[in-house]
Amino acid sequence: KKLTQRMAHPIYGYTIQPKEVWKAVGRWLVENQNWKKAPEPDCFVFSGTVLASVGSILHTFAQPGDKVLTMVPLYAPLQKVVPASGCSLVQYHLPVNVERGTSRYEMDVEGLKKVL
Image 1 (cartoon, rainbow, N blue to C red):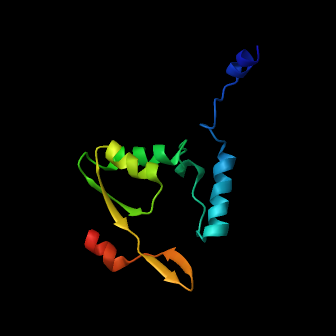
Image 2: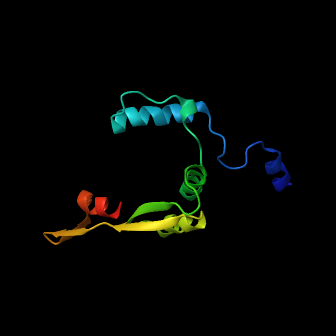
């Protein structure tokens, strides 16, 4: 009975958001990310996962065999979605800077240019 009641509900998951959600996201971008103007709610597209988003982007903008650059370290599943899309994965290893006993990854623009 409970399953039948749940199945009668029109929404399964989070695939539809009210415009108020995207308006709130737009306000957050203005207030916290220094955007000059909030995007219109219709500018946003919902995706269930980051992996699905990256897969859709690759499917839309890349051709099989295209090279896709990623900076590593990177979440391993994101690296796997590139070859799964038929593209070639090119990795740029971010250099590690050890300073005062603290390690951090840094962007080396000149090193990145060599990979490109």
